[in-house]
Each structure stands twice: as C-alpha cells, then as structure tokens.
Image (tube, rainbow, N blue to C red; front, side, top):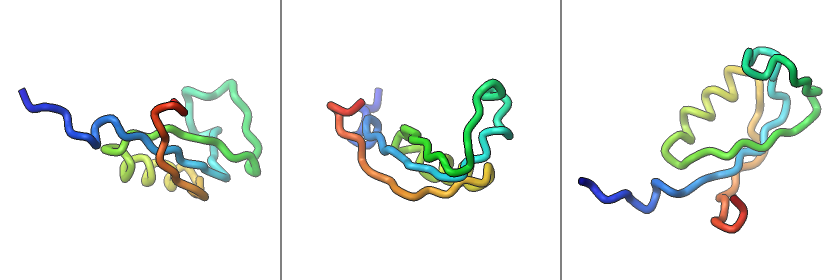
Length: 72
C-alpha cells in the first residue's frame, strides 16, 4: 500500500462571489443573492476541478487560502 502524501490532507478555502446557485439542483430550496459570497472547502487534489466547476456556474473566486487543521 502506498502511504498517503502530505498533500492528501491539505484543504483550501475558496471564497466565491456571484455563484449561480439556482443551476445546482441539489440546492433547489436554498436561495442566494448574487452579491453573497460563499465559502467552499476544497481538497488540494481537487482544486483545478473545483475552479472549473465554479466558473461554469458563473461564480468568481475572490480569495483562496490554506485551511489550517484547527479551522476545519
């Protein structure tokens, strides 16, 4: 078995503005104004995938910061 690398447990916090939440069917009961910012916890190995997803939904990433273990 391959031991997990140090990047496997690293997370980042994306602050996203303008996310079009209405296009996400799993959140159909949740309303979000376009001016509201949301925070999304993203594992290191999914950062690029999540960036593309946010862009497709009309959001803009305004800040990315590493998430410390005591913040999770």
